[in-house]
Length: 180
Image (cartoon, rainbow, N blue to C red; front, top):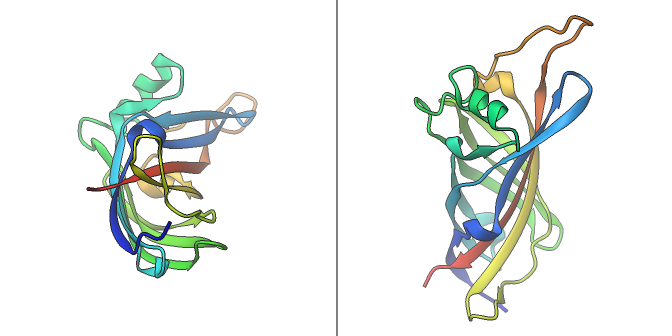
C-alpha cells in the first residue's frame, strides 16, 4: 500500500526501547523504557527524506529489579529529576526500505548530546490493522559508550574489573500509526 509523504506517530503500546550492558564483567543486564513517544515524516518513494523525533521518559526505566531501577534513576546515572527525557532527532537517512537504512541523528542522554548512527532493518509497506489504522514498523540497533553521555558511575570489583560496563547496546522496535 503506497502512502506518499505521511505523518506518523509512535504507537507506544506496540513499541519498545531496550538496552543491555555488561554487569560485573560476567553477563549482560537487559532493560527498557516503558514510556516513549515520537513522530515520523516518511515517504516510501523518498525514504532518504525521512525525519524522526523520539522522546523517552527516563523515569520509566525497567530492569525488572526495583532497587537497581531506583539507582539508575538517581543522580549516579540518569538523574531523572534534572534530566527527565532521553531524546533523538534525525539528521540524515541513507539506504532504502528494501535494503535497510543508516539513520544518523542526535541522541541526548543526561543533558549530553552526541551524534549516533542506527542500523535500521528493511521496512515493509504500510498495512491496515483490523481496526482500519494504517501502521508501519521499524527496528533499529546501535551501540553507545555510556561515559560519552556523562553516565560515569561505577564500582571496582575485588577480583578486578568494574561493576557496570561502558558499552551499551540499544534495540528499538517501533510501530507507527498514520496520523489522521
